[in-house]
Length: 165
Image (cartoon, rainbow, N blue to C red; front, side, top):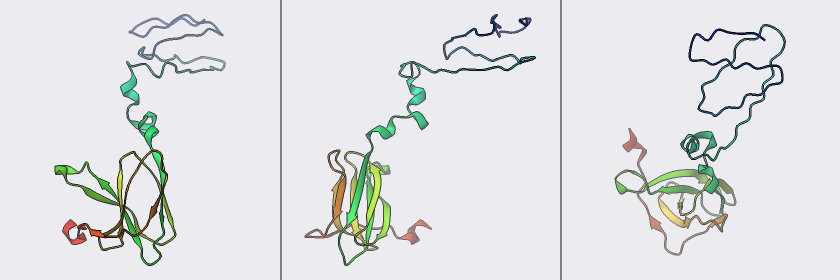
């Protein structure tokens, strides 16, 4: 086989055709160019639950964050109005609740589907008015939420778009 002089911290193990090299993920590694033939590589990752690397998977595409998501559907059955469906963000700054509109001008007899989480709150409001006609709190055992009129509507202040300028 081809011998290389070790002029750095890189180690060139002596491997023959068909040999396998197994190493821990913490080992910096590379391959040297081949002079002829075809190099085949078989890569296997294991021990993904290793606590030493768990923080690598707490965010991003490998996150478990979505595991607790609950698929929910809001069905609007008030035939004489359009609805604005808003998520109540209780984590807004200064301890105030912030409304995040998830569906605007939702027509009667339509579904709005999304993923949500246990305890999340939603308000269904008469479109453009801030008049709350239904309130919901998400639970694991329920996936369909029907928007119906409340007996006593309540109003919530809406942000005036002019305030945003």
